[in-house]
Length: 262
Image (tube, rainbow, N blue to C red; front, side):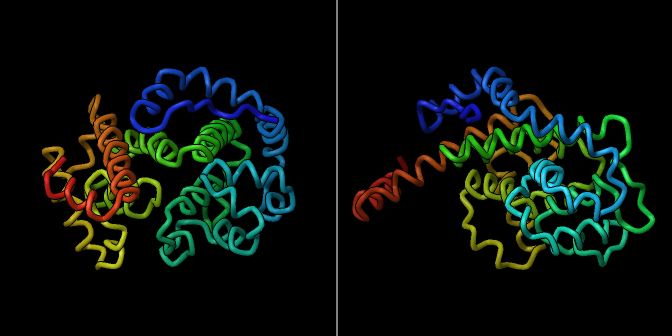
């Protein structure tokens, strides 16, 4: 049995414990995945087509797991289409899906028409294996505390996104298309999940305005600064803890807390 993350506490106190022990826990957890990552490193260079990848369930499991898509391992027709169509064509499936994890998967492997296949490149196996290890750790954390999983994902992805050379709106669209990141921002900013029913540009305006009120700027680039992502994560965890506490109370008690502003 692989190592399971140790999370003795919930809430922000539990998050601080996880943060202090993160490197040690990740290193121990990684040891339990060695069989998968070594197999991937040994075999992925031989993969030249989508068929080669799809017929090897062990390789496919690591490939999908690296992008948080492990539950799609049996959804072979769908994944084949994502990989075969690539990302160069604006009408490809990966470009149409709201969850941009599929775009990242397809782009990483480069099987689309006119795209450069990356499976034989030096460093590719290490790149995918590292992402697989991180995602598997987050998933195992999430089995015990889903808020911590979302927080870890935000720490990992948001700092990278903030530094990307793309427009500010494009970064927001990426967040809105990532279910884990979107959940963190919605909770931290006090927004309902029903926001997704609005027009995408209207959603963008609301997200930007809410972020500016709480963080002084509606620009995602600010999360490249030291401490900004930590502040977002802290706000997310505290808001989530408050929300869960209110939900567990009687309607009268919950109303009293909300009215008093506590």
